[in-house]
Image 1: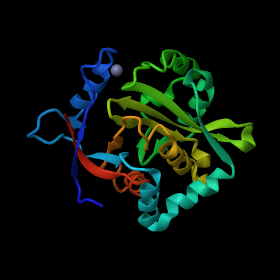
Image 2: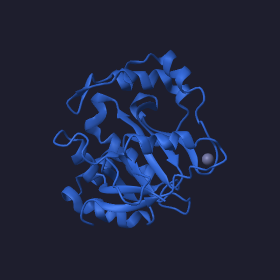
Image 3: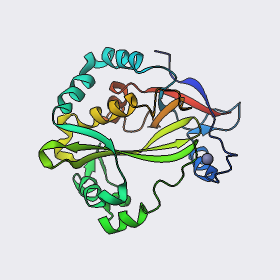
Image 4: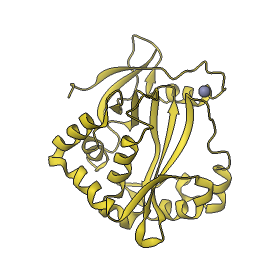
Length: 233
Ligand SMILES: [Zn+2]
C-alpha cells in the first residue's frame, strides 16, 4: 500500500457536451478535487484504484483486519442478493432505511434523510439524470430473501468522467450486523461497472478522515479504500 496521501490525476470531463459538468464542478468547489497543479485539494479523499482486475483488490481486502470484510460479505450472500434498481420505484423502502436509525456514526441524520416517500419520489423522478458515457448515476440495492426480496440497503454510484463515487450509502439499521453493506460494496466492485474496461479509473467514498474514530474510517480501510489527493487533469 502506498503511503498516504498518494496523488491521483482524475479527468472529470468538464467540457462534456451533455451539459452535466456543473455537477462535477461541485466536487471541485467542495474541496475533493484540486484544479491547480500546485495546491493540493482541501480534503484527503478515500479511494480505490479501479485500473486493476478484481483479484488484487480482493487480496488487499483479505490482508486488512484479517479479512473480516470478506467473511461478512460471504455470510450476507446466503440471505441477500444485489441488483440495480430505479429509486423512484422503491421510495417507500428508501424512506424506511433512511429513518431506521436516527443517529449513525455518532451524528444525527441530516434533513435530507427525513424526507417522506412522496418527497423522495419527486426528488428521484429524473434518475438517471444523464446517460452519456462519462456522466451518470446508478442505484445499487441489497435485497432480503426473507422479506420478499425487499430493499434493505443501497448505494447511489455517481460518475464524473473517470471518477466514480459513492454519493449516498445506507443500510437498514437492524440488518447492518448481517454484513449487507460489505456484500453490496464487493458486488459493485466485482461487477462490470468497475474494475473493467469502462473508462472508470477511480472509486471515491467521500473524505478519508470523515467519521474517524467512529467506525466509518475503519469501514473504509476494511473495504479497500486508501487516502489520496485528487487533481483534475
Ligand atoms: Zn457527459
